[in-house]
Image 1: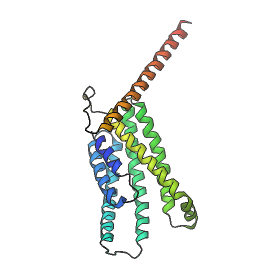
Image 2 (image 1 turned 120 degrees about the vertical axis):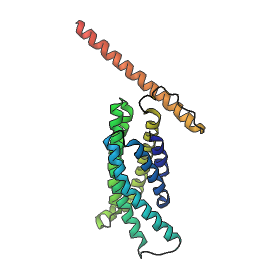
Image 3 (image 1 turned 90 degrees about the horizontal axis):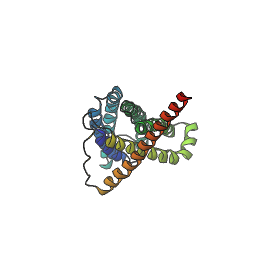
Image 4 (image 1 turned 180 degrees about the vertical axis):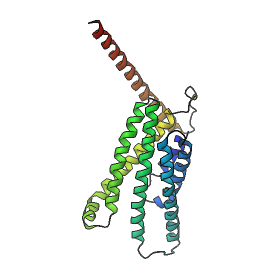
Length: 230
């Protein structure tokens, strides 16, 4: 369906040090995932269109990083290029990620998977906050320079948390959202033992939530019947 590629691409994108080399790989994998997901709702399709300029910007930055390693100077102020790319990248990532999470939220609502819907909504709010803060830390302005001096590390840590939360969400979508007709298919064992353990743990959590929801519904139905009798 595409969520597996989305998860892999998002994990590769969790890199703040050599992002010039890993971003483009991450973007291309996510682009492929969105091509698969775009037929399911309009938000996935809009997210697909939104990530295309991000892939182009990522390719340009990859080329710039590669030429820098070869000691080929294209500009006198290399730090300014990094700052401009960070701002442009943050704006484009904000747009495509917000649309992607809205698409997941909508799909989870249609399939009646409340846990994934709530997580997607929460992550979307976090993403708005993170990218706005990131843009503020990159602006060449006296007022924002003071903010950046103290906030850059907390913002980076918050961004790392947001990326982890999104990766976990995408993995949950890979586990629990399937195509029509595939609901009863058995899940294949992964060649990675830690993924199998993660799946078992998540299955136990989901089973508990389902049982809790059933108990809540039964209690409400019994309560309504008692009120009707009175």
